[in-house]
Image 1 (cartoon, rainbow, N blue to C red):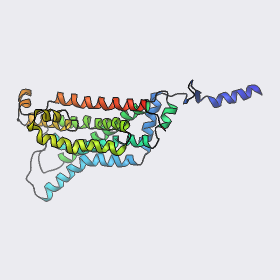
Image 2 (cartoon, rainbow, N blue to C red; image 1 turned 180 degrees about the horizontal axis):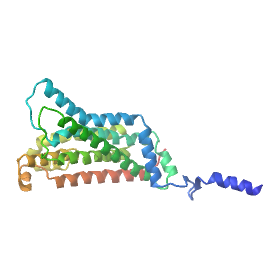
Image 3 (tube, rainbow, N blue to C red; image 1 turned 45 degrees about the vertical axis):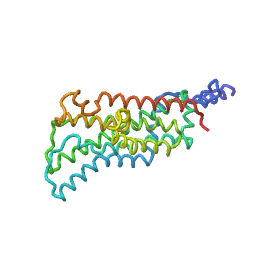
Image 4 (cartoon, one colour; image 1 turned 90 degrees about the vertical axis):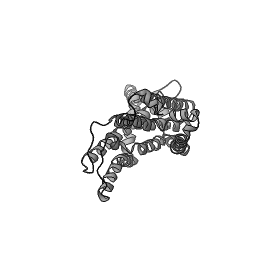
Length: 290
């Protein structure tokens, strides 16, 4: 009888292990389980469908509207380049910021508390969120840009120039997801959704346009514009398009005309991503859930 009782107790205790500090963690508190949890959460939330519609619509919708207005207004045909397939990149950036800012809401609603109890590393959930959301936005934006391309090549309002600069497409597809990472890191740091989304949108939509308009007034303002996060993708797209259409032919000429080199743009974006990821990881480690 005693052996039977011990066997039952052992079987019940298998899924859970008691740690030295008194925490109860599953038998497999791995990073893979955190990734699985994030994917499950993403694909079971009703808001995911809304995000899919918004990300697809911001690229494909603009191309459809362009085709529609060209046809009803009888606008003369003009050439269509690869950049035209990614005209909604700036809208996708805003959507990425709003999506990433949701991390602060999850902390406010105690939705991350279980991660601290069921994972042996409290950063697992945050790394998993960084990766899953980056992949989610990457796939959606890539599909949206491809759909926009299909709309443009089937339109008869103008010929598609296949030998135009293709780099802006790559910039949009690979660059937009990092704004979700930036917003997630800031959201975990501030722990307030309104402050997170509001501060980033004010910088991107108000402060940075002011820097662009006033950059000629001071070298300091010019460098602030070059080092700002929101204009990185626009700067890279303008560089490749301007080099393709003959505005300048060499890197030196581009710099003299005030264009930002792609190398500097990549460093700026990488710098901002690292800053906010580190800040988010530190805040997640330093603050306890209630």
